[in-house]
Image 1 (cartoon, rainbow, N blue to C red):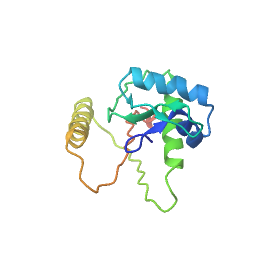
Image 2 (tube, one colour; image 1 turned 180 degrees about the vertical axis):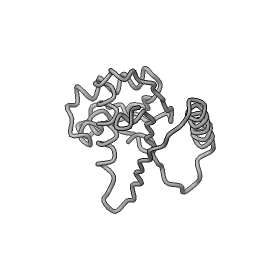
Image 3 (cartoon, helix red, strand yellow; image 1 turned 120 degrees about the vertical axis):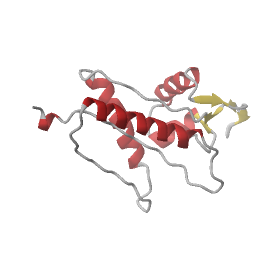
Length: 146
């Protein structure tokens, strides 16, 4: 939400329909880890100073323990929530592909994906381009265990 637009904690909480105190905890964590940066304080509607935040563009990647269901669920829930905020008129491309790979093929696939994502993330933003979010998960398919 803060990639192109500075938002205060209250504005973020309103958009997420969440408790501002809970959101502030998460905003502070995102600031401390470098995902958000506080911008200059500004007067709010009531005249009190408020601090807007802007995303730094930092991305992340996790290798999760298969037993860590809480964290996996939180990440997937965040993705579902984000996609739910996309206007109905916008296109959302979602794909699922099942493949059988050797360990070497799996490692090569991950390397190629990481290289490509780093390439596009590291480039200069295209003027007039649309901001996109990419969610990718690669996991063993439990329905086809040997």
